[in-house]
Length: 130
Image (cartoon, rainbow, N blue to C red; front, top):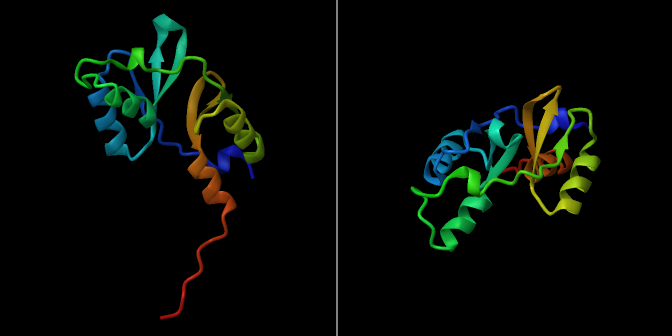
């Protein structure tokens, strides 16, 4: 199975000036665990994850004052839609992260997460008769 078969095509894109609270609200509303941060001044795409927001809160930082740019991972590993899920899982395992931005050409077309891969690899739940 390929990344394009498993990825979510809901790509939340935010700017570097979004506060962490704004990012969290948008992520929650779209039911995603990561946002692509588009910062043309800093050289392109980064990723802000729910874990980045959680870590900031754990440090006692104010989510209304902290902005995405200071919590964004900018050294991002990107996946191609034609990668196998094994390639994506290996990249995540080696990098110690749970999301990959999927690029096709120059822009993001999706995000694939560990959850997406597990969903594809796990057998479908069987209904237990009542």
